[in-house]
Image 1 (cartoon, rainbow, N blue to C red):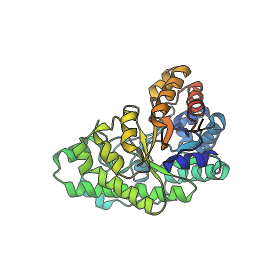
Image 2: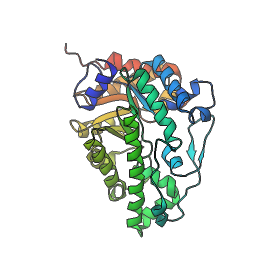
Image 3: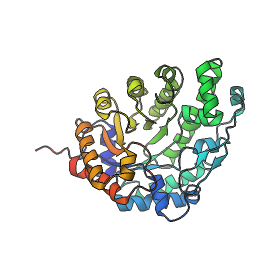
Image 4: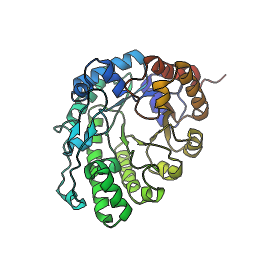
Length: 345
């Protein structure tokens, strides 16, 4: 199998020739160019070249393409700070009150920065290696995360806690879903084979399982369902330990769950088997600070747990640090080849 066939088979919950491997390495790739990361993350051509160079070095099966977790927010009008040594971050929120959501328009990804630059990078990658590597072009923030950046995290947490304007909370989540969905369509139109949303604010570390079910879950589910009806594969990432929302996490219907290293992979594998593909969840701190031998051992253990029955892609539990040693990245990729075979004796 080639990488595209290998990833497709895993997502279809079947057994490929071996476990595919993903790298969430946009920061590492940008740093390796020697240019300020602020420059790379503003320019689709530079970002594409950075990801191509990394793919040629490491030979991973799946490329996760993005410029950080503030792309959608910036497209919606939030001021974003670009930094030279790490991913950009959202600044001052734009919604002084929930009622202001009625004034927001869904941006056109083809003409709105920085979405337009990520689309450019997607087209370049699809043209250059789209038949050799699986390109997951990320639709950036999911409904909950984008809503928090538009409103302000502290303010949005208070909105959820009081529940006094529930209809407006859902209006903001619905707007945020429509932004991500429109962007997802464009990314697939430009050559992505799947897309992905991150929801760091949606996990049990930030809100209760009850609030997860009451607020973001239905919007994540709706996004998955709509995209699936158009043949589009959506990954869902929720940071932290998701054990307390395992059933709901799976019930979103996302074809791929990107799992954080804090989640018990064995328990989630048992619950998700035959329902969804898991991607992850090697500790990014280990990748950044450990040895190649330690990375190899962690990957071996994880593969033994998650490989049986298919439906598994080996990768980091979240975005890798820009200073992650290349030797540790090679160890991650090689572990899939060493321990991930499905060949029958």
